[in-house]
Amino acid sequence: MPHPNQYKSNLRDLTFLLFEQFKLGDVLGKAPYANWGKDEVLAVLEEAYGWVQKHLGPYNRSGDEEGCRLVDGQVHVPAGFKEAWKALYEAGWRTLAVDEAHGGQAGPYTLALMVEEFMCGANTSFNMYPALTHGAADVILTFGTPEQQATYVPNMFNGAWAGTMCLTEPHAGSDVGSASTTATLRPDGKYDLRGVKIFISGGDQDMTDNIVHMVLARTPDAPPGTKGLSLFIVPKRRPDGTPNDVTVGGIEHKMGIRGSATAVLNFGDGGRCIGELVGTTEQKGMSQMFHLMNSARIGVGIQSVALASSAFLNALDYARERKQGSSIKQWKDATAPRVPIIDHPDVRRMLLDMKARVEGLRALAVKLTMHIDHARAIERTGGDKALAEYHEGQVDLLVPLIKAYGSDQAFQICATAIQVYGGAGYLKDWPVEQYCRDSKIFSIYEGTNHIQAMDLVGRKLMQRGGANVQAFGKDVGTFVAANKEHATLKDAVAVLAQAMESLTGTGGKFMQWFGGGRMEMVPAVANRFLEMMAETTVGWLLLDAAVIAEAAAAGLPADHPDRGFYDGKKFAALYFAHNVLPGVTAKAQLIAREDRTALDVPAAALGPL
Image (cartoon, rainbow, N blue to C red; front, top):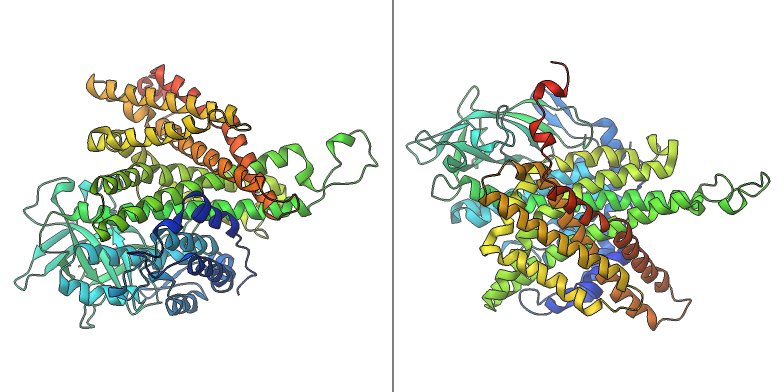
């Protein structure tokens, strides 16, 4: 049975980010977003928010309680999911940013990702199915042959068919290059696939007639490692409707996202499993799959923002209503009236901490997606290639931050929300315990957060000869220079400047290790460096928002409804600058010590064998 919707978001924060801080309006009304204006964007946000509360939110808790069932080789999704799938594709939400040539609405990517936040937050488990379908279709659209595009993409964009990504194997998790699923060329140009994939989200379900699996496999003469992998389109049913030999070996019983079927899939276990090579060239599988993985990692960041935001807002409402204890100002008076717990200093600190982190993460997400929209606009209109490279480079740099830092923070924010509720938060009566369970997977799938950190320090810092990270530093430096004498924020801006200096110095330390034969230090501290860079970025974006908010509030009467919102921007930025940003310098000092304790400790010293 459905439950009342408990999902909450803050539309005012979204509109501030889109139109006041990151200037989405600058790319609207002209190619490639010629049919979009501010009014259309605002209408979509309002309508989508209401839609998820009606169609997805009521099935979040019930889907968690019921979970998925495997009966006679067929996965059955929780009650209400089939109806939600049908309503989703009828409403057209999945094609907001798809080109009109493929049945889409050619809207900004940023808008589509803001709607994605609503979908993820209202029902994380359900949204796994259409999100993966969209990603798989986009891979075929980008790399497939015209025939493959015509066969699969329309059916996936309109919801007739679903899609998955199949990388992990029992012996090859993060070590994708060890994958052993085989693909043998047939006389007709297709391939016979044989192997087992595990942890496949949406691996089976009963909402669609077909599921198109994107499978990494190795041809007989392929070299070892990731370079030898190819990507194949392997539908559950072949385009002519005949069954393919793709069977479900089982589904996992998980801590969270229980309404999302996580399956073991057997390919060619008892019959013939036929797939098509994506495109025409073998051994391009990892580059093709990483196109999907990059989008998926941004998607994980959006999932993180969505659940953290709803956890915070639910906790905020509870703190305003729940009365417990007297004011600290009357702590000796046993007869003093009971006050809402939001009046207690530690509760208010937790709420402001969550607010700053949630709004900072959302700003990071929109900053990233706006770089994508600017790059797309330049590409479609033949604009400045150097400027396009700048935007694309910032996307590459920010993806590991939003995925890794966003997911770590989401879990912590959800835990803090439980703490605000106290014992009530530990109960299923309130949504925050499910948010906490659902969010834990975010730091694990689509590349663990350590993989994100190693990607950042091992690859992203030196992309384009270091030009991307230099451009990032220049952007932060420009903000600091412009606001170092700001009347109310100058002290906070000085802390940001110190954080950026510490970040830059630590980046140089990595270069020394790479060049000096001390590579073992890199993975030991990579996660800490990613946190440093993410916190510097979030601190910068929060302070940027505070500068904008202060200027906007200056011309408003005291009783204007936006005064409280703009004040919130200022206090969130000040809190983060004075309570989180100093940790960047502290982390830099820890890294500079080059402590080897974790490297030198013998395995036997960690505990009994």
